[in-house]
Image (cartoon, rainbow, N blue to C red; front, side, top):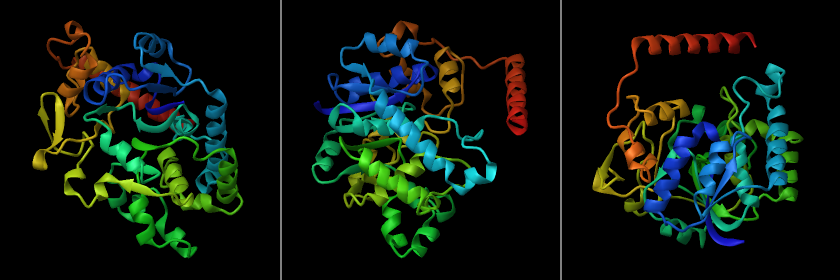
Length: 339
């Protein structure tokens, strides 16, 4: 087992984003740090070719662990009132494998950092490894600031149990797009205990089922209920450690292809391109002028090793193409309604 490493989750659909992330880690974190790609599903032909071209990158192959997390997530979801209301264990708004990221706890590194595939790494991880000497989980996001109705956990329901108060819960809320932790947490016996609490004791309702099942919401429940220590850089007493990270919300300044927080020019751990689809990045990589904030940064890292293949200019899609996409989207919505 290696002492330190990085995980991400990918398949061929997000190939362009995977390449950009791997290049950004090489440029801004450490060119030699081991990276392990957890398969989102079995669409992996391009991913495997990319991994074969990089000495420090491997494919996660502990399929027993992946299946354990698949079963755990599906079984507890089926117990949620939202699932019971629909009468389906997997609806149109829950049929993904994002919870596979949690297989990192059964992986190959004693300490690890997970980056979402729609991210770019922007600075070394020294401060993260240092925090893991004191804390069990490390995050860097602003989920704790969200209003209760859209928070990951149903704070009013949890407060009624008398186990936690909002003041205990709120600073522990987090997302799952970037986190650090240690090998061995949530081993099978602990998962069994959590599953019993979620299903038999009804604690599944602690998870906010506000309209879809979110693996990050489940992760929030787990980090709260396991009662291990947690640090979030956005709650750090050191103002230099508090930055934004979302491409669609936070203002950044590009300095030599590294993004910094606009206020005080603080370096950020990563930029997270949440709310943009994988097809947006695929089209951008082919030279289409897609409306993505900080797209120049993405293109730099996507083609860092192949600068000759980088689009010379970005062109807007034709009216015909736009119309076709709108029709496809409309057909997709109808299929979801009638399915």
